[in-house]
Amino acid sequence: MIRNILNPFFHLDRKNIDCMKMRPFVERLKLLREKKKISQRKLANLLNVSAGTVGAWETGRNEPSHEMLIQIADLFNVSVDYLLGRTDNPSYEDKDFNIQDFLPEDVKEKLSALETSPTPEYLEKVGEFLINLAKTLRK
Image (cartoon, rainbow, N blue to C red; front, top):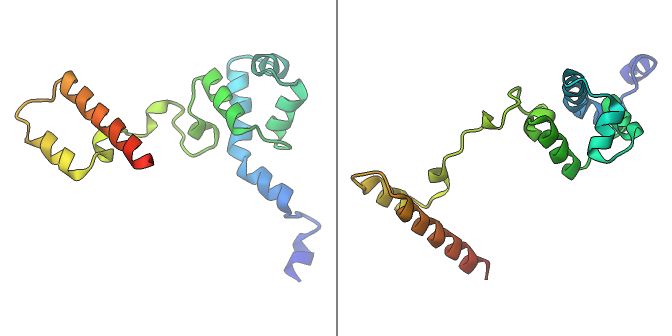
């Protein structure tokens, strides 16, 4: 019953849901393009796609591939997370990255036990160890 009441005003189908998911991308792509004073045709040339493709992205009728999202982010010097609306910070610095978060506990303990900061040579050895460990685990 409610669906019949709402249906004349807004038909919520898969296409509308997909468009709503891409809304931040649609808005941000157009905003970035206009901010750089680039036409749809110029952007299309830079990305090696048609102007119609860019138009379809900006209206939400189509969405770019993952590879194209990366190219767009690189072109405008923003993160893919920003393009997709996962963050409001356009820079890559939004997420804190700490290599120690990925180290095993015993390695963390050894690093913290050092009286001085580890030397680049020591860190290089740790990196080599981790690479060899990853190769061993893949086998």
